[in-house]
Each structure stands twice: as structure tokens, then as C-alpha cells.
Image (cartoon, rainbow over all chains, first blue to last red):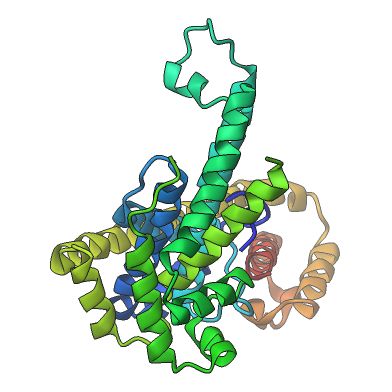
Length: 201
Length: 146
């Protein structure tokens, strides 16, 4: 998924039909737990990158509110079902927040260390060459740590390779690896447990 | 580290969490069981999220009604403009314009006015105002649908 701005090209004119369609088509008992599972996984992004932690419940709530507002274009060809649409909204929010975080870090270059800005913000600045090296090391170490976490688990390693080539749906991974979809889901669950305690910072 | 390198790793993490969060091929019971294993209080979580859905739906409905009201008020304002515009027209011109609007009217304006010549000028102006407003409303509806 591309890192894009939550506002870029997706916020169009208010569309009242989105509300009607969500009210009429969305099978909430089926959708909400799946959204929560997805949001819980996506918030791992923040934890792994050392960005402020985000509550999965808040993320789902934000996505539902944003979707209902009708300001987000629902492309039915790309996202035929309400759950696909809502998941895309969650993904977009997460990407926006990460992009915003890095933009902010870039912006921090302009901050004067002697100014009265929050010290925490200044310390995030990439202005310092040492900080740049640290960021590089940390990100590379994180990626390395993810691969090390699955060392010895051939199945998880295979799944990780699929993910690296942007195959993220269990069915796609199953086709690629020859595993059953159920087996892929179990491997993903294992993968989640393995990387749960990894951290960027 | 360049932005490209950083974005590659971030993109990898994005794909990784996409895959881990995907529930394709899982029954809803399996998803709920997983959430409970992760420490979510299922009933409380669902109760809170249903409330968010309800609130978001109501808020969207209110917004929809407000927008419709604003459009209606704008149309009403235009109606008074039409009244003064048509007031100076001759009866023939009023009938001509009514027929013109009727011939291009969409289904929502499919009303048949017979024997227009027997109507008074005031009646004709009222009919013309209605047609003009209805036509504009139809135009707004179409652009909303697009």
C-alpha cells in the first residue's frame, strides 16, 4: 500500500449515499470484529516504528466516522464490499499518520535547539548526523530483527517472502506457497506473536 | 538513510501488518477468539463500536438534512427572483416558456398542463415558477448523483 495523504484525492464532495449504503449493506456483527483485528495489526506499525501508540478501537472509530461523513470517495470497483472500503479507510489513516510523523520530523529541522519548543520534538530532529545514522541503524535493525524472529520457522520465512513482494491476502499467499489458507492464517498468527515484542527504538 | 530506503522499510511493515490483520478465510468466531486472546473484551468493544456506528450514521443523516434544507432555501430565494422576472412577461411568452420547459422536463416534472390559454397570467406565472424550480432541483439531484 502506498504511503499517501489521507486527504489526497480521496476527499471529494460529500456523498450522502455512503451513509445509506453503509446503513443498508453493512453487516456490522461480521464487519466490526474484522475491522478491529485489522486495526490491531495496523497499530503494530506505530509500535514497531517507535511512533506514538494508537488504540485500535480509536482507529476503527475514526475510520467509521470518516466513512460515514461521506467525504471519502467509495470506489465500488476497487472496494465492492463495505468491509473492503472501511479497511481501506483504516489503512489510509495509518499511512497518513506515519507520513505526518516523518513530515514533522523533517519540519523539526527548522527548529532551533535553543527555542522553547517541546524538547521532545526537537530531539526527534534528523538535523543531527548522529540521529540520521541512528534512524538508519534502527530501521535496518528492525527489519533484520523481523527476519531473525522467524529464523528456523521455514513456513513463516516463506510467508514473509510473499509479504515482501506485497502479497498480503491469505489466499494470494496460499497460492504462492502451496499452503492451505487456514495454514497461512495460522502462520500469520505465529508471525504476529514473534514480532509483537520487537521495537524500533 | 535516504527517503526511498526508509519508505521501502515502512512499506514492508505496512504489507506485514496488512497480512497479519487480514481475516480472509477466517470465520467470525475465529476472529473473535483471536481478539479475545489479544486481550480485547469482545462485548464491551462491540458495544462501543456499535455506538460509534449509530452516532456516525445519525450525524451523517443530520448533515444530509441540513444540506437538503440549504438547497431548498436557496431555491425558495430563487423563486422570488423568478416571480419578479416573469411578472412583466406577456401571456404568450409565459405559455411558450412553459411549453419549452415541459418538453425538456425529466420524469419528476412530468405534469401535464392542458389548455394553458384559459389560465390567468397569475396562474401561468405560478406554473412557470414551479416548473423552473423543479427543473433546477432536478439539475441539482443529477449533479449529486454524478
